[in-house]
Image (cartoon, rainbow, N blue to C red; front, top):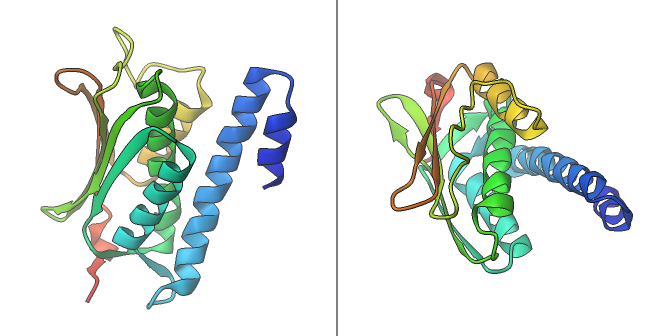
Length: 184
């Protein structure tokens, strides 16, 4: 809450954005911890519940945007839930901030289990990525540094494509399902 208050009082747009982004990251970690305490099994979160709450929170803070969210009902260990929550937070935050300059549009977030891996996809039909965008090139943006670092931490792979007819699609393949279990 304090970061949110400080962001509104910041005189520079860069400082305001940095504080808002930091607050969003802290909120994502706090949400994972809330899910860990409330869950049916200590040390695990229900992926579907977590993602629905995360998308609901984004929807409440992004007037004009619709967030569609679907995740398979899986239990994720705390060791994977925190970086996964931060990763989803970063990608959805980027879509909320940049995909629709007019503030109106749809963002789809899904996380099904496919062939023993978690496939997370965040897509929109907004303005798309800049021409020549390559996530593997060094970036000045802390957000993309965080994204690539978290993908490495989860020993996953990220692919980026253009969403047709416009927009962006981020596809994550995360081999963390050895510790995932279907929620009864």
